[in-house]
Image (cartoon, rainbow, N blue to C red; front, side):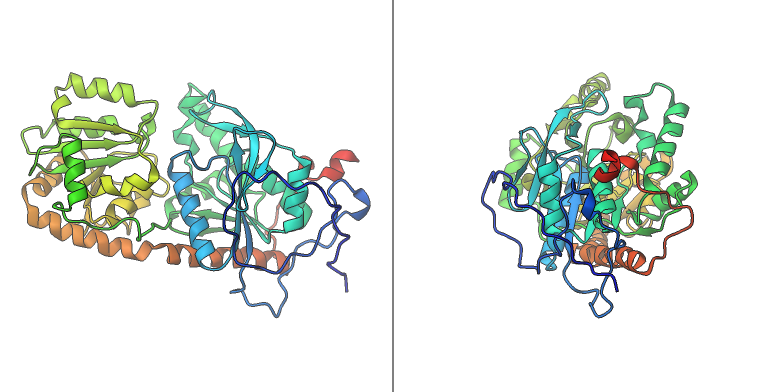
Length: 465
């Protein structure tokens, strides 16, 4: 029987420690792998097996990889940070690989950071990490992650492919971003942009052991792109310890209302998220203008490339006195803003997981949003909000909500009830099952037909051959 023991990795200098953090609970060290540059010891014992006597509940070493992380604020980062915390709480050994502005690569005990360069020409605030770093690669091989879980499709994805090809660990990927809705940032022709997005997505996803989608809508979309690899739906979780209903007479909430200059007793409609074209906030403002005769004030939390155009629109429609643009808010302050609201609205056409919708529901806010299959089972008409289908439907629903405090309270109770099924422990358990599925597929050799070979650049030995 083939042995899974490999020669010891030569000792290299440790990565710089940028801060002291508490270490994760002890997990037995992985089998040591050979130095990546040593072609004589190339691993031939793939795939990495799960021993038949090992319980699937055994804590795992999981490497989460993403091209964006704190201090950046967006849905991908929030979802990744929540997953990291949920998996750690469940007893897994979890580390993160991401980018940083610094050089050389650093490691603080939980997060590896790659040097990077700005890539705002592709997407605002985007950065491209270093694709090759021998010392960091060797450190990761020494640690021996059992699961590689990517959350973006750029350099972090390439690192996962290379590690997967070398270690034999399964590569799992969560498809967070509907790129066909973002092609206006780099391609002026919508049709060509969608075709490029579909082709690149298909090529990347068909290299994976398992694709994770937050909703069945995105699962169907990927199948339509021609993705043949296994796909599982794992709804995004929400931290119920951070987000929860609060009375409007809470002193902290009352103080924040006063600081924003909100009129006492007037219902507050809330929007949280990036101010970008694809979020379609211009439609929300137009719809609110159509019911200006009703009592409401609108608080917009977030910033982005479309902020200036939105402010111009608000002034043009004569709504400046009723709209507050808060700007970007630190993550720890976001729950306080949800507690200001009487309702949450969104007209976004580009949602894959609707994380802000879950945060609003957990905060006890009724949600009124544009109808989208992504929200089926989340925003339930007549229970915790309404998915509107046209301007008239929006106006009718929000009018009832604004004028009927009892309806707001009833839908608010339904909102909190719905959110209770999306807590982080549920999220961690669902993802653990996804990891087990990927590991079992590797161990049993049940690879789907047509799985392409690993890319040539993913194997340092092939590159040096």
